[in-house]
Structures are given as structure tokens and as C-alpha cells.
Image (tube, rainbow, N blue to C red; front, top):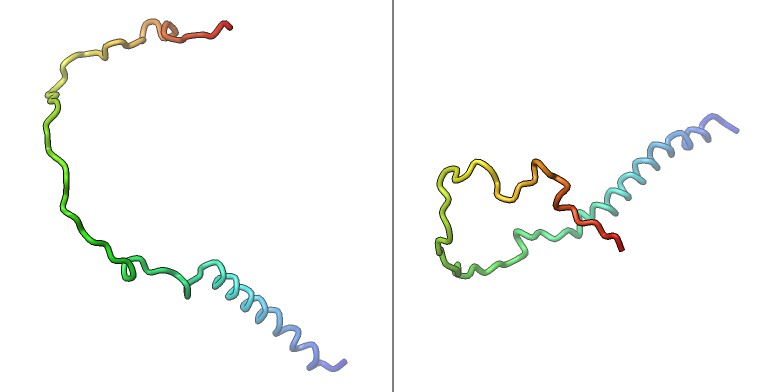
Length: 83
């Protein structure tokens, strides 16, 4: 076996790894098949519908605590199923 016959085997490793990386990149990225949404999709604008009806107004703090809080008896609202 001569020295030149093993040299191609050394070069095949990095070349094969590069080819495998490029093939996997192209397979998973689909860069040549991707859909350009911004360029290829037409969106027709329609007039805005709805109303601006005012429902309620809260200005400032009305109360110092929340009604129905359970700070003192935090287990009082727990319902246990004894069935």
C-alpha cells in the first residue's frame, strides 16, 4: 500500500462532514422552498368596525381593602368533598 492511497481517506472525512452538514441544513431549513409571507400574500384592508362606548370610571382608590378578602380566615372558603 503506497502513501498516496491513504491520503484520499484523510481528505474524505472533512469533505464528507461538510457535505452532510450542508445536506442536513438544507433539509431542515428549506431555504429554497420557504414562503415569503410579506411579498407573496395580499391582505385587503377593511374599515374598522365597533364603537367607543364608555362603561365605567374608577378614579383613585375607593376602598382600602378588597371586599370578600380572606386574610384572617383563609381556609373558610375551602369546600371539602366528604363523599
